[in-house]
Length: 558
Picture 1 (cartoon, helix red, strand yellow):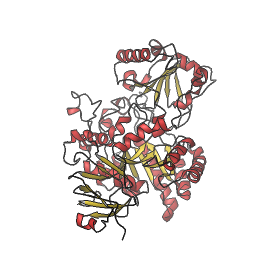
Picture 2 (cartoon, rainbow, N blue to C red):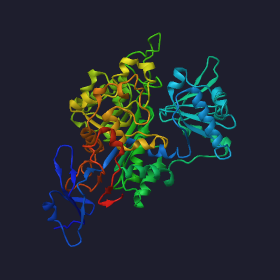
Picture 3 (cartoon, rainbow, N blue to C red):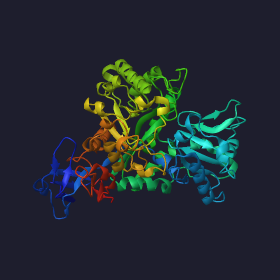
Picture 4 (cartoon, helix red, strand yellow):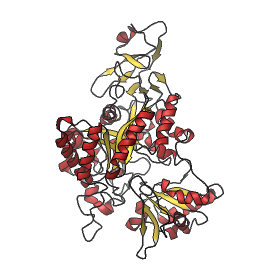
């Protein structure tokens, strides 16, 4: 009989969402040998077995972040991070102060984070305004949503926007530079990836970190592991060097977590390229802990920018003709799903508003009918901020997976979406309770994009926010929203449901349930020992949890 390397005991071992607590677990060669009573685990005790008393602490399965952006975050390590300011004059003063504190000799390109869409409204910010506080070098201020930005005049000129000599790339196509009635670029750009700023870098003769350096990504990965996150899925894998980085870290024994990548499909025409990348990267970079078998596609934009796909015309359109933006049609999605099903490659969709949600449900239903009993892929809808009530039951019926970004639930994006959706529809957003009650599978994630918000990848901040609907850092006005609770208050999620989503549901969706997602004999020994019982402390204190210990495959990494 195999003997245990370690037996942990005298704990509250939360094995899974649908089972009772265990008091002990025996571990050998990185896996659980036995989970149950101390007496049951002692059967595996040998002369070299270490015994660890947990002192009654709660033990959870290792947590899983179902959608985040480690390389995108790593690329922002050089950005200037500023405090959150809504009022225009205060924002300009803040930018000036940070520009003065970061002179062009040290920071030749001032990339500041961030401004809020509400500050400027639907017309967006103007380059001339930014010029008043920083004109000695190119400057870009990122929108809070990461789906827009604000350039000064020098940056616009370096990018070649006026004469069309340059262009900016982005994950969903080329950036849209907003222009005034005379055709002059205003300085406001939508979906402008920082990768598209190469014109600025070339003219400066200076290039920022690519994000695939170990020193750039390590602080973020370490912060996740410190909180008990032992697995993540990349919202989209930016390039081959990203896969190579995670492969190299794992081969060197430095990764100590699971990484699942995703190949980006900008539009339907890029489907075959996305599939080819999956196959190429699978062949080159698959390890026990690193893998990729997913294609990612952006279906619409954001509610705050007014480029999401809505079932109703946006409220700020007098003509009642603006229903937002779709990056791919229902017919194209159906074809993509059938093709991916042939390849047995899963699909991850960025979906924000109700029309996008509906056409994606339709596409899944169409593809399932075409594939019949051969249907085998997993389709995940990420974000799903606004869902028409008629479509909620379709999640369980069609076997769709939902990925929700928990720390958004308190109103992180403010009230900018009201401009487009109206208050009545805005009040119904971020509600997954009926989907869960109907048997739909919902997993949870952080979806952070920069080091400016990387602290919000802390899963306990996300759990608290979705359990209370109150944002810790930027709560809604308590005079307008009782207790700063983001409507609807009835959409608060239970802690038990949230833990299920961060463990079992995410493991299931990522096809890793044989390894992770619960504490069971035969599975990898991944767990987190909490310093406070998350099921017993007040909801408002959950963010204070700081794990005492974290184990990855039988090895203490904290």
